[in-house]
Image (cartoon, rainbow over all chains, first blue to last red; front, side):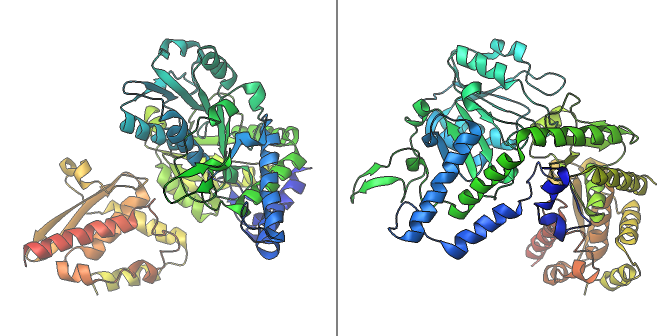
Amino acid sequence: MTGEEIRNCFPYFKSNKKSIYFDSAATTHKPQSVIDTIISFYQKYNSNIHRSMNKAATIATQKFENSRSLVKELLNAEHSSEIVFTNGATDSINLVAQSFLKKQIKKNDIILISETEHHSNLVPWQQLALETGAKIDFLPIRADLLVDTDKIKAKINDKVKLISTHHISSISGGKQNIEKIIKIARSLNIPILIDGAQAIAHTPIDVKELDCDFYCFSGHKLFGPTGTGILYSKSRHLDGFIPYKFGGGMVDNVGLHENSFSELPHRLEAGTPNISGVIGLGEAVNFVKSVGFSVIQEIETSLAEKFNHELSKVDDCVLVGSGPRSAPIFTFNIEGIHHYDLASLLSEYNICTRSGHLCSQPMIEMCGLSGAVRASLSIYNNEEEIENFMVILKKAISFLKR
Amino acid sequence: MLLNEEKLILNFSLFNNWEEKYEYLIELGEDICFIDPEKKTSKHLIQGCQSKVWLDFEFKNDKLYFYGDSDALISKGLVALIIELYSGNSPKDILTHQDNFFEKINLKEHLSMTRSNGLSMMIKKIKKYAYEQLNKNG
């Protein structure tokens, strides 16, 4: 597929011809095939899954479980049962915190994360630490805002019960050396969770090769519907997960005073799930497969190079994180201009960016900033949009500086 | 209607596009009734805005007067606008005022009442001050 063919798959751009959408790190647009799949579910076989014995329910259940197989293939997991549907990456991390770690962590034990995590990979651990008396410690960070893998071992002792860090930064677009971080965790027998929220749409994932214990992402950042997410977990951990949401769909036998849980992964998916969303997510995985990561990376590398080159010509622009990028994400400030003012003006010119602390307040503060503007691109963007963006950016700057 | 409301609505009606409205907002910010710099503390900070916005008040002759500042130009213009709108009015008039002013000046489509610009929180804070004064003074 060419860049133009890919863009044509997304109806948003037909409805918003004057808009430049550079906010894909917040959420991606959905291809027509994903939207059609969701509509088709409600129009043709709307029903509840894993319960009702009717034809529509059988189709819905098959499609729902087919999405699990598609995600299993996308991540190259060993079994479909290692794939748990959640409502997003945040939900997935909470699931690991509450169902896996809570039962084994004690007062003064340590959860090792980094100061550069977004709030989803910080707040659930803060909450668990509050509940259990455990502590949070932070992996050392290099100047390029990625974990300093040479200094990890100095942070590790027998109190560390879990390491959790992100794959690709939502601020700098830089990729962590998760291969090395996982290897260190593995050698010390410490479970490790990789937050793939910003990686999933940009790079192929092979959880078998990575050998991480947990990997999570949100469907809406992979051209899928909001309210869908994935937790991959190695089977040996998943077996010991204690459900923290209870109700229908996660039990086999229910008496008035007791019950028995369903098999995995269903016991972790209480209640009627987001059926249309999960089926839509399966279609999003099909879409990504049909484009292929080699094409995705080729397009995104070219867009990132162009954006970087053009942004370097803008006076007084200061980028947050200067290392190589694995995703076309650019967070920056213009000296003398408040990020809120700049983003407000860009919005008036129909440019969608994000500003503020970008759900990574500790990291932004660590950089000595109160906020920044983030432009995040995806495969459906093109060079013309980058050129137009730069013209408008300069116009906005001169408006605010006069 | 509040003291300066009609004048502000008239002023905004003179502008044809958002650029002119923003220019006017920024100019308003330049003449803002500044908050005492010593009061730029967390106590007077409006929580949840993407920019820092401080707001304080004074109660004299049965009327409320507001003072503020912000570290961003547009937010500062917004605080100045709100101060211009509410200052010099009685707590009762402030509390009973209908919040459709931003629709009347056609600014709502630009500066929606989202958490990011803190507009609704500034108004909430002003009404809270008015409520407290009303209760204090019977």
